[in-house]
Image 1: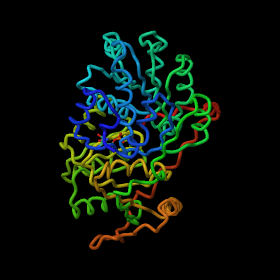
Image 2 (image 1 turned 45 degrees about the vertical axis):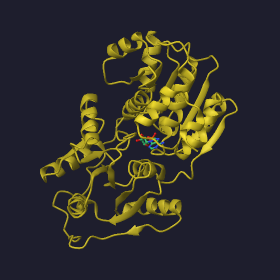
Image 3 (image 1 turned 180 degrees about the vertical axis):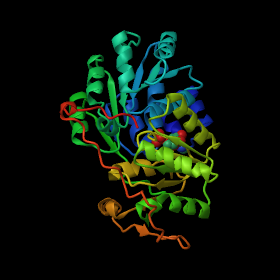
Length: 404
Ligand code: AMP
């Protein structure tokens, strides 16, 4: 099947061609017809499958003949980067239609966003917190909303955005088409689906497993040798862009600094940066002026760089879903990629879970010529003891996870 069979408006077809898409990806092929018919939909698809265009294209078709300057579609996503990226994808696809998209997220001036909304946009991509600020201030009008998309719903709930999403839903009481995309379906997401989707069609693209265009390898190593191993590995392989994941913001910054000192063209992406710095890091990585990006999970969510040849897990992720999301950054739509994971003895359980997911053992590699017996430097015997918070500050309130 090709894009012509969906009877998109010629100006939408112009956008599709301009991006060089020749045929729909499986998620597009399976979901666009139902969305065009106005059905609610659950899309179970990992990142890198082309899911953004799967909902943006039918949205453009639906809005193309609607009055302009009113918000007709709202796409809610968990992170600023994903929000910005979805907005860019939407603007690229709609370039010949006259339909405009705006991104709304925290950490930047509210005033500028209000200006854009006042000038009139038809599609809004938004993070939940800042969207609520606009709703409460009356600077966004959703009374004409026709399509609501909840993107990466599982991650949204992981990050504690469920109360915000519910509050947003209270502001859109009229009947609209609702589309929910998620890589997994945890209990919270299933409950919300029951409450807000009306007789939804479900589309699932394969298993929630890492893309099969990626090859995976484990590098057993002691914690204190990870940076030395990383440098050794980078020297020995041919790479395009490399994305390195660490578990903490602090470590992302430190590993980037160490690579920089060794002469690598590297930047980091973590939540301690200002939004402008985050954007500069991401833009630099996208344009290729930084060949290596060291990032934490949530900061790297939604990064769409087609030439990522290697994803390296400096630290193993906490769940197999996180692994899939990280690895989804390489091997995107028909490209090949390599995923390398540094594993210590503490990661044995995670390795077992991954092997269960893959239904086969993962390859363990050692690097010839690397000194695995290097002793740990003195005074570096692990983490400092964790400080206990005073009892009075410990309460049972659920806390929203900070964007890291
Ligand atoms: P997504 O999963 O939406 O983040 O998309 C992943 C990548 O696939 C993006 O770079 C899209 O531009 C690209 N893409 C989406 N649809 C197609 C298509 N039909 N053909 C080729 N590339 C596509």
